[in-house]
Length: 337
Ligand code: KG4
Ligand code: ZN
Image 1 (cartoon, rainbow, N blue to C red):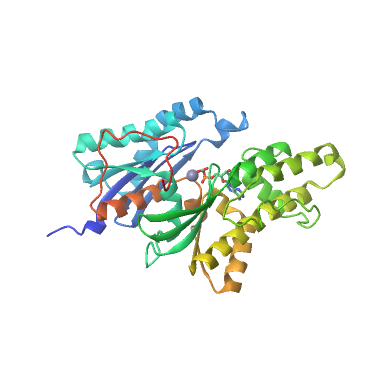
Image 2: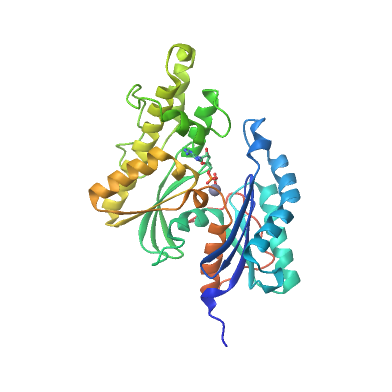
């Protein structure tokens, strides 16, 4: 019987930064997704140390792959393709995952697929939805990127705007560090902000009214820094809540403005920062008020994972695409040229 090309088995590996992840998909059905976090290892340095990350990917990848295979109940020789993130990310980390996937592709004589990490985030809100990828305005907010993208269909994206300096996640992490919160700052600022008054400090909403879809978060970080000498006398939850509100206000306003300008009716929110409780809440309220449909991936699919990489790989495979084994990593890979 001819095999349904949309139901082929894909093993995907993600090692672009500090998470070692593997996932197995049958078509667009997720059979297993394993993530080994290195957060504890990097916490003592207050950020990701590239050499520590790559050494640990090397140590952890094999057990993570074995766990994914055991969960899916499938052996390596049953796979129809092997995929890995080829960029953007840390060069020494990307090399571990792509080398492993290429070795498996060579060993089992199956196609290799080099996947753009940003396309993984971008399409993650569509994963598991009945319609799959469809026209939308996408906001990708991660530790390294803040992008507004128009999606016309699979592989058809155009960039509307991006950050001019810090990424949204980077701003959360830097502010968390300034305030003495544990690494990574993002989830900790979110947690502390729950008990704070978001109107206590009127932080700048940079570029809120600019005539484009770009962002800037470094001025906001500087405003928080000015408060540091007074930190003993002010409420940390109020600072966190006010900072978070400023970031979220700009992200929500620009996304909705982009939807209006392009007449898109669907918003797709992705990347680690889309775990943020206030962003999810405000985006939900704003979309409901405008009659827009909001797609947000589950939190496990928002932060780095291999399921989103496998989803893109499965779509590429179904479109007859694969990558040459000689294809290289690209630490600065863009989503759209
Ligand atoms: O997508 P991701 O896992 O990795 C990158 O590709 O960068 O995103 C990580 C970023 C970090 O900056 C982290 O602090 C942020 O996502 N993040 C959050 C939250 N959870 C993760 N930022 C704000 N609120 C959160 N709840
Ligand atoms: Zn990411």
